[in-house]
Image (tube, rainbow, N blue to C red):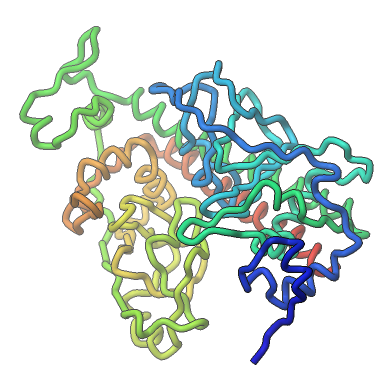
Length: 435
């Protein structure tokens, strides 16, 4: 059966022989956008550069790579830092970033730079509205490129076998259609960005408040003007020379052991033969982040399997999901009913003592203090993992109740902002497809 017929002249003109490029859905979309504007007609497109002067200390200069793009924005906490004197492709407010290698097509508009210096790697393209005679709002452009119409065009131009990429010359060919609802879409997307920017600030504030007060409530054990002393046996026991691990560890006057305040329940495995295209979700490690669940490589199981497993493996409200394999130590509070089954790489922390706020426990585990413990407890040479007995050893600092309440409240409010921002972003992007 012939799916699509392509004339020889068209093959010669576009220099593409891969059949995916001539998929009927791409051809129909191209016909729909025949009168739309070429991206290059009003946008300056610049590729990032490779910087080798990564700083060994935390500077205010961030170096954005493909892996730093998240559903809520750029994860500046994970960004590499470079010298503020670096000579690279810099970013200004209202620039749009597009990943062009690996996870191609991630879109992010940078509108809140504050006191940051931002550079991009060679994996990322910078789009900057320049000759914008059509007065296309950057927020609208970001929404359009994120929509199914924009993403389909990006997908059509992909090339490569093991590592997919898109050429800068092909990005220029993307067509931008201006819908009648242009201003409303731009306004919705801008509001979504405002919520998502504030969410990151509030969550960082909650974590910093915890760390600041953790240090203020430290003991004076073995401290002198040069720092503090640790016995060699303690270093051998932990197999870790990181001084911050011992600073936090010895800064606790009072703490609870995790196994005393939660029950730890393992997940399960259903086998690949149980996977199907739709149905109840089977939650794996890659679906869990400290800010919420993501739909990356989602797997589904049928309702019969779900009913059989749900009594033991379905997370309940206020449970904490904790990853233990692969990328161990990511904690997430279940804040709504979930019809999912958790995999063997995830455990449920079920609160035994209701005086402990699950949001506080999750924040502690996700903080630098918690992650230091995770790294010292995790085993495995190639694939890191946590044993159940080691998870139970995690220490939860007992700070004053009013302070714990303040930290928990900030964390919850920040995640609510993320939820609002995500919903508005989806609404803005979806409204483009409807037009």
